[in-house]
Length: 426
Ligand SMILES: Cc1ncc(COP(=O)(O)O)c(C=O)c1O
Image 1: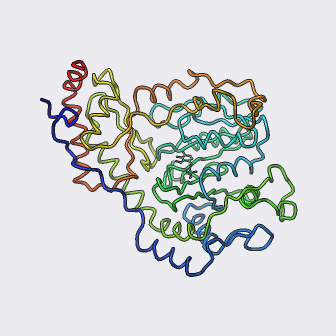
Image 2 (image 1 turned 180 degrees about the vertical axis):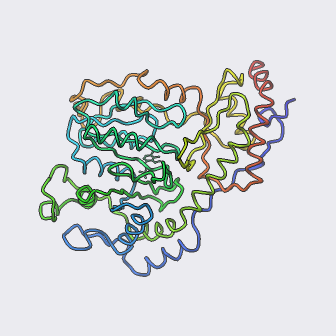
Image 3 (image 1 turned 45 degrees about the vertical axis):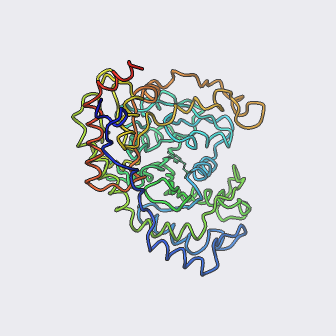
């Protein structure tokens, strides 16, 4: 019999990892105060100060802008709605192309479609898994209107290079900063390097308000257009300074006073919430980096990685066990993990079937671009064979537990021959 839990041995970690305690007394009190005020949302669609939200929303936006050194923060009810609003605000038109990475959450790549824009996929970098500026440059045409860079898993994309490229070509850079709230590239906070950066405050993130998001920008016009799209855009024709009515078809992307009140408390404590995840991920990296066929996340010089995901590159040939079997054995030891992240997003049914808006294939009728496999080989290889991921944001892990997690990985690695013997025995 083997020591491995999958083969009948004792698991290194007994029981589930405890969930991260994201909410405390201060959040509870903030929510109670809003409920007692009776005003759960302060927005009005018509002109007046409430067009920009209630007191907590405005306080939260001011605090967010100050924290990240941005001129404007525009809160929304999700990162997804922030991405939609951003695509509208930059004046995206049917047939315009938006360059996106294939490895991200679907909202990043779906957002251009809402305005008839065409997502164009550019592959990611080997080391950081973020969109590769060289691959982006190769995709730019006279139809390109914007690039969306995602600071994936908490690590900054090459934002300065991408911004320089966007500026040289006269196009927009949108930063999907859902996963990297305190990411940093050469002293600049992620989310503030693009023309618009968008945070997510959904339940799974480092800090959260249940659902929520925040767009930041230093551009007055973009800020106004984001505010209009967020709140029905009824005011567009009379709003001071708005002469361009393109995409002023408004939504309700408004954040509630409850969410803003929670967001204020979470934001005040953001450094602690992020640092605790970083510390865990760094400990896991240090404790396992010597293992053969096991490459822990890289951090580019000058960058801060927030580790929304701790993603290891697994080399099946070197370890000598299939990734899926290794992950199964690790799960059995009590270390929750997944073989792979999401598939390359051009594999989504909507791209394969060229069916997005309506039944006639719009907006794909406006492009010759195709969404075949093979266009982003780095992403495909990582997805199919190499990525193993763990989510530091989900759990409350002290040093002792982290050391058990390391021991679990080392145990499966050391006993890998047992796994193959077991697999061969059927
Ligand atoms: C990279 C990325 N973009 C967008 C989103 C969408 O965020 P939300 O759930 O706030 O709409 C997520 C959520 O996980 C994400 O990770």
